[in-house]
Amino acid sequence: MPSRLSPRTVRAGIVGGIGVVCVTWGVQAVPSFRLDAVFASAAHLSGLLAGYGVLVMLFLMARVPAVEHGVGADRLARWHARGGRHVLSLCAGHGLLALCGYAVHADVDLFTAAVDLLGYGGILAATAGTVLLAAAGVSSVRTVRRKVGHEAWRAVHLLTYVGAALAFAHQLVGPDVAGSPVTLWGWALLHAGVAVLLVWYRAVVPVRQALRHSLRVCEVRDEGPGVVSVLVQGIGVAELRAEPGQFFRWRFLQRRVWHTALPFSLSAPVKDDMLRITVKAAGDHTRRLRRLRAGTRVVTTGPFGAMTAHRRTRRKVLLIAGGVGITPMRALFETLPGGPGEVTLLYRARHAGQLVLRAELEEIARRTGAGLHFLLGASDSGYDPLAPRALHDLLPDIAEHDVYLCGPPGMADAAVASLRRAGVPDARIHTENFTH
Image 1 (cartoon, helix red, strand yellow):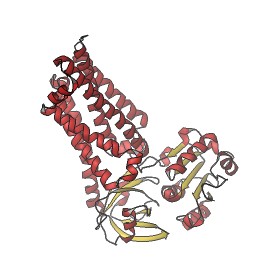
Image 2 (image 1 turned 30 degrees about the vertical axis):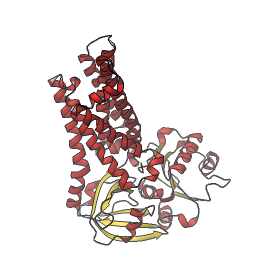
Image 3 (image 1 turned 180 degrees about the vertical axis):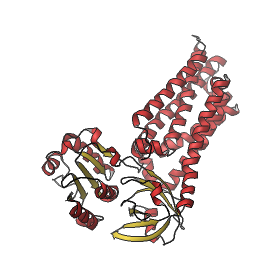
Image 4 (image 1 turned 180 degrees about the horizontal axis):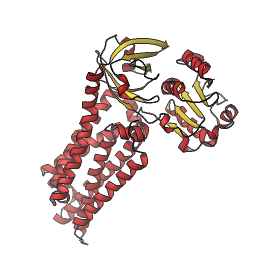
């Protein structure tokens, strides 16, 4: 079984790092009540915390398997988004405090102080780095993200590596880092370690997996209107140790789709060196997957995700899927052990034509004795099949279940709220959304 770092362990490590940064600053700080010194001291602390925060953000997105498997891609993305806002605030605070400190010390106005400071190469580099980080943050705002294509959003985010490098160069000449050989080497090693993780897991591992397992598309199968399954075969695929409920990031080396890697869940357990994903056409890239040719090489990274049987804590399990969110639920539905009535799947869709993999689900239910319910109807109708009362009618002991959930964000949020009102504790609601 893959090693896993729990969310508590990762959080403790991050908080511990903040403590070390504060101690490092405190040991070197010179107490003074002069206004310029107070500004400078606060600027140093906020700058160190901002630099550390950038490292944490990069680490969270480095795709380290132990972190991804233990914390989950969805939670990591939320931490990354929330942490990014704090880092940008610290960067802005650092710049403003440094500007005010210099203005007081030199007895000049803020505009003159800004012009003077930008004359230093290290400060100019740090300013450029901050602008790049801010651009990535703005592009991730929900309203902006909807209007920006995935490729443009990804290109902006790749510039964050340049921003982090510029910030690192600035820190190396700052008194808090350069003032002590121990701090300088420690800071440099910390950055080098995160850089190695990024290069290894985001670049080396995908190429190594592609060469080792020789993954290729062997079939593209229509599953319904706008939905296809892509079957990928390779050599020694079991070595990837992919679990039902997990996903890979897929790059198909064919014209017009090779430049984008997107996350798709496995829609069936790994069998006979075969991986299968089921994809709904929701954009230019996913629509083009229908035209994949047999023999197309595939580069994957993964598996990722923590929504697996590892999270199960109860004998009874409820799976809830909406739309194409059925893909990880279908794999779990087939593989979760349990007697008749101990595993139940609720599949939400507007109408029967939107049910994906229906025949497979019905066959699994017949073979295992698991419960299967199709909840059909428009979401704006008067009756909500996922309301607390409706859930209780279907499963009177729902509060005793573990619940796995995957679906569109609106449906997933509403379902989580209903489950809570139905008495299911948060610790037993397992959901993951990697569309961030």
